[in-house]
Amino acid sequence: MKHIVIIGNGIAGVTAARHIRKLSDYKITIISAETDYFFSRTALMYVYMGHMKFEHTKPYEDYFWKKNRIDLMNAYVTQVLPEEKEVVTKNGERIKYDSLILATGSKPNKFGWPGQELDGVQGLYSFQDLQALEKNAPNKEVCNRAVIVGGGLIGIEMAEMLRTRDIPVTFLVREKSFWNGVLPSGESEMINKHIKSHHIDLRLNTNLKEILADENGRARAVIIEETGEELPCNVVGLTAGVTPNIDFLKETPIELDKGIKVNRLLETNIKDIYAIGDCAEQHEAIGNRRPVEAVWYTGRMMGETVAQTICGNPMEYNPGHWFNSAKFLDIEYQTYGWVYSERNKKESEQHFHWQHQDGTKCITIAFHNNTREFLGINTFGIRMKHEVFDRWLTEKRDVDYVMEHLKKANFDPEFYTHFEKEILEHFKNTEKITA
Image (tube, rainbow, N blue to C red; front, side, top):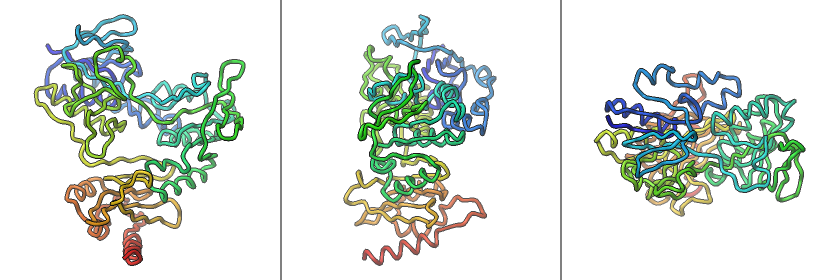
């Protein structure tokens, strides 16, 4: 019987296993050293915040895997031997495969800061990171202050987590405004204010120089690059992005760059070896997407796609129109299509921006300044329907159509205040001014 080995039990690897099982009777083995069972990584923050227990983050009951004949192996893979078609674990066990799926995810970026390996210095990605944070910052008595380095989605999550336990947080962001490489300035500035309103010490234009140790080898302070200020702390969160987890493959003939190089079928350069999820890197970027995408839903889509190919129905990975969602403390964020920051915006891209006076709701719509084709939308604090914007992007609707029909896309509950009329009026007034 053909044996499919999957390294990694995140959303990409588990989705591949489930769909291979639906399509075949192949033997399937998932190997992971992180946890015994698949869990929802995006829910880890809510465990620390007390909203749920860890067992609630598991989408499937523990008996699901045996029932569906998916073998789970808790082990750390140290080697892949393509010629022998084997993987080797840390304890020396060798597992033979017919097809191998690499779904090893990401690891937090580290940039060679002195002290980055000290106790109390950690990322926020894995289950082990959650355990470390529970140990390092159980309360404000043990952790008098935390310093978070890196202004992205993981950083804001970690800040929110720590603030639920009244732990003071200083947030070091090297950019002049939060996430302004992704967000247009109006949105970025709104999030700056929102972060500060939650009593988080946001330091913009600020870089980490060094992490200082106490006599026990634990972090006791950080040094600020620009000022030399010594800032006492007990925990340092390194949240300056992630990078594909591929170090164990560097001695293999598998082609690597930032990630594991794959074609549209998610095949590597070695026959019967595939890569999916955060660790995969497309030879050629798909549309405006990045070659490496560390996004939950793209991992799921890659898992579904590679299962088809392995089961004899070759299928190219086609993620469709870009979309994503996140949460900045109390403000929900959605994006559909492409809305670039000023740093990356093309000359042909024009923005319409509306912000509510309460400072917690806004939208930015991008459109082509000549054809007026709708290019994308960012929404903050207003829920919109994915399928509506996905259809409008496919139909290449113009911005005027989108604005007139914006109410059709609203997804807020019945008794929420709706702002489409106000947004449309502002759009028309803006158009008059620029005409």
